[in-house]
Length: 249
Length: 249
Image (cartoon, rainbow over all chains, first blue to last red; front, side):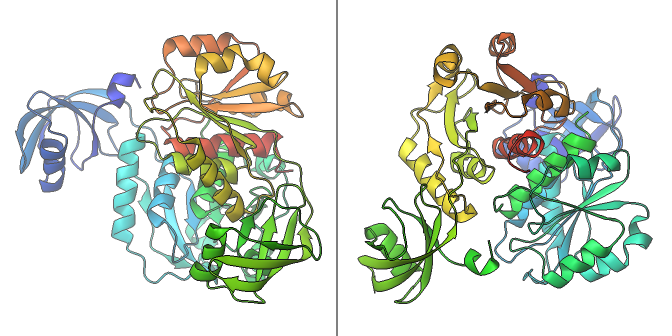
């Protein structure tokens, strides 16, 4: 995408987008464009809806309560939503917003919190995580907003895996795994449907680890010899997967 | 390292470490152990100095102004400091502390700010970045503290490269590079001395890009089809390098 478009504000909207379409933004987005960014009539913004690609649009009114836009021209065709499932095990003190943001930047399609023995969070606010995902999608210019799936226990995730995910393989980033290059573990998965589960800081319990490794759909990989924070582990694991067998080609 | 050791505070110190050695911590570290962490006589901490590995130590006094320690036993042998040079181009609003922290977590040995056409920071506080590096090393349990080299312009970095770095190859993570798998670009570098330069958000200028790609020691790689924040790009690039040709084996 040309750099000029990269300077424009980018918002996710629900309505269909096509040349000549006119739409009115809701309260929050209108306030953001008109008051925070001080956009005025004639200024350009980019809209996307996860179905029609990205469109250059111009303001036709700049009221802080209600911005009107005219859709001008498409600047990016719609790309398919990512099929990559990403599960993470949150700790109480974890920067959940960062983990979601990083997962979106790295191309996850579905993001799901997984409760393990060493996770200590109570009920997560899915709406907040969804807002983080939308904002991250707007900022890193992905054309679909990844879905935040409701939290699930590790036990339920694994017992329901076949029914919920079919032939999807589950790559397991476990700090208990001996350090090795992930290329040989990942190459056989090229073209397959995949998911990634990143364990909590402190790792899985021995029982959990044994259970995971006994499953035929689980593929363990190492994330190297150092201890990684949760958001670092998210990016490292996704980078390795995306670069070797994912959408970096 | 057994999980029990992972719960212990870990500090970088200057003096030699060996069984039976006694040492006294400075003001800041004493306050941290005795007042913040409330460690008392007999409690264990881990010390490292970049030369002698990691050592289990016990407090023999717990004064907030001056903690004394006895060095008990080695828990990790010294590993060589990383030879991986990591250069990043900071923007004014960038989370410099995060970039340094992530680079340490991902195994960089030398970290250097590089001023490019699109970077806008004034003189960086190297001491602050060095403090970030030390804290990150303590927390992710690396056994040497990576060096923060003084900021340098891109022009100077490139003109001095042969003299300063010899046969080191420079991997270039450039958002202008067409998306492709980095395996074929990186495999030939296996066993070579390497550096990584991550461009600023917004990328290099056209002039800078042409200059970089004309150099025989430069190896460009893509970081995928999405826009990455600076700290995400740091982790993604280092993860790809470390997993394919670095210390993940």
